[in-house]
Length: 336
Ligand code: GCU
Image 1 (spheres, rainbow, N blue to C red):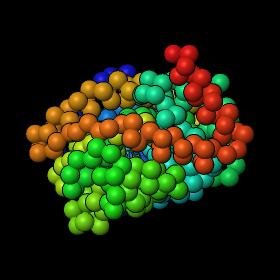
Image 2: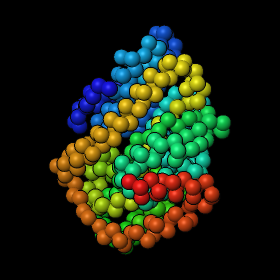
Image 3: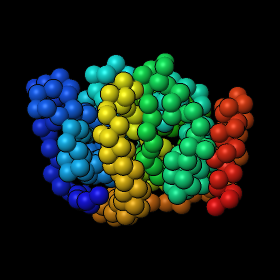
Image 4: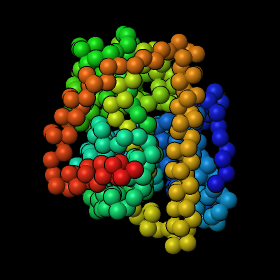
C-alpha cells in the first residue's frame, strides 16, 4: 500500500458537504461501484489518512470498486451514520464501539476499561477470528451491518477546562462529556464526575460554552478537533483503550464479486495495519502541537482510579457470551 501521509496543519477541505448535496446515487454513473464511507474525524487524523490511502489502493488495484471517504461528520454524527449504513444510504462508516454496544450487548465487552492493555493487544484481539467468533456478523440479520475490523482509539484520558486532575475527587461536580452509552455514563461516575452524553461534533462548543467542564479522549482527537484550545488541562487517567469499528452494509458487501471482495479485503487489511503504525507517531505530533497551543499534560494518581474502574466489569459483564469474550481477550494479553 502506498503511504501518502498527510500531516497536521494541512488545510481542511470544506467542500465535502457541497459534494454530498450533488451526489448521484451509490454505484451509479461512471461504471464503478463507489462505496461511500462516513467518518467523524478531520483530514489530519490517522483514520482519514489510512482510509484515503485505501481509496487510492482501490483505484490502483480494482477495475470496479472505488471508495470515497467523507470526513468531519459530513454524512452525520456516528449515530446517524450507523442508520445510514444500516439502510444502505451510505455504504460504510467508522463508528466507535460505544455505538455498537447500543445494538448488541456483546460489543460492550471491548468498550470496558482494562480489557485491553495497549494498542498492540487490542489489534491482536479484534483481528483474531478465533477470539471475535460471531461478533462481527452478529448485526447482519438485525441491522444489515457487517463489521470488518477496527482501528484503535488509543488510550483515553480526561481533559478539563478547569484544571488538572490527580484523583477522582478532583472531578467531583464536573460534567464530563462522554460518548452515548450507559457504560460511558457509569465510567464518568467512576472517574469522579457526572457523565453527559453528547455527539463528538458538538463537543468543542460544549466545552467552550461551559455546557460541559471536561471530556475524555485520546491525544490525537484532542489535537485534531482543537479541544485543547478550550480545555487545556490534560490528565493521564488512561482509563481505557478505545476502539473504532469499520462497518459496511451487509447487502452491499455481498454484492461484490469474489474477486473484487478479495481486493477490497486485502486493501482493508493493509489499511488497519497502516493505521496502527501511524497511531504512535501522530500521537506524539498531537501532544507537541497541543503543547505549542498552550495545553499542559499531567500525571494522575492512577491507583486512586483503579478500583472504581475495575468494578464496572462486575456490573456490565453479565452474560456468558460477554464473559467468554472478556476472558478470551484477557487470555491473549497474558500470553503476549
Ligand atoms: C474517538 C473515536 C471516535 C469517537 C470519539 C468520541 O475520537 O475515534 O470514533 O467518536 O472518540 O469520543 O466520540
